[in-house]
Length: 419
Image 1 (cartoon, rainbow, N blue to C red):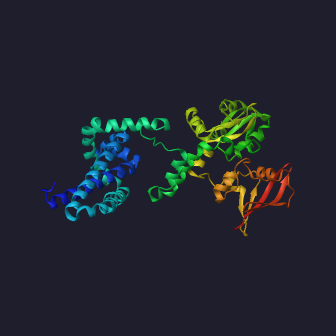
Image 2 (image 1 turned 180 degrees about the horizontal axis):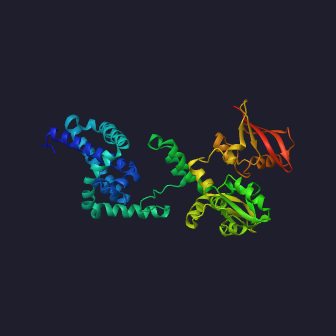
Image 3 (image 1 turned 45 degrees about the vertical axis):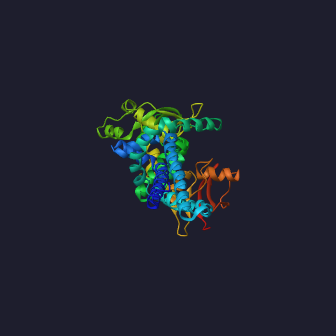
């Protein structure tokens, strides 16, 4: 070693530190890559992305070659630094060499390259893949494979796996990814994506029209009343029944009825001919499931039934879609008339109003667990039917009962208090 010039030793030490920085940056760059962007680039034909994807399929092998190279060059760097110190300062320098070399490696071969790799993983990982791949082919069986075998045997009792970790996102992780997308996804699109994710948490009871609010046609009524029910309806499809909804016959499209009426052919017999068989939905069906069921059955309406076959309410395709894209009904829709703003900042609200609709329209956060309507929320909280003038405070919302009818709250005034 004495015949090797110091300039060569210093150049060798610099090269070894550079190689250590390369392996350190490669490790972080590979692991910091966005796996979904990488998958997209690989499927688009990006050569480096395909190579990196193959390397990441066996992370134990990739880490094995990186750490093997990193440790080897660090050991050689320590040896060369020791030789340089002995040549320059003798035995007294041996105590200082570890400290100085540790600082140099820490700064130039660890912190700086790894920070760069975290900031620009693709710029580091893609070029590095063309070097790591041949190194892995050459050194896998003689060096990397035995090291991985021993390491995996040691990890087995602790549940260690040689396979890559799963990168599948849960619904909550996907929700967080959508919310953190920022300007990459417009706010309106974010809202729709989050609405789709929420469908699996909601059931048809959350959006159905309660039985008491279902408008339909009673075939047992007088003919003039039937015609009036049809002409006065603001809905395109109506349930048809005899006597009560418990004896439902089917669903009729109002437009077909009006066509018969214009041609003068509308009577009991012609009306019954255009009735479509009812479509029933079991209670508790998740909204995402029902959306697919509507598409498969090519239906837009369904009657919700309980385990005894009793009708609980009516669900429409539009109600489910509104959970995704927000309100798109016309101003004549009934639910819009259930909320009236007052000059003092409060709102007069019908007791039958859906809490979910209320929260969505006014950007409120009234509790939606349990009761689904304002009336149900009040009676559940008080455990009694309140009389007009009764007030209660639910979180930051002040509720005042304005009018009751029978066993239900008909109108309530709600004001959100500033916290």
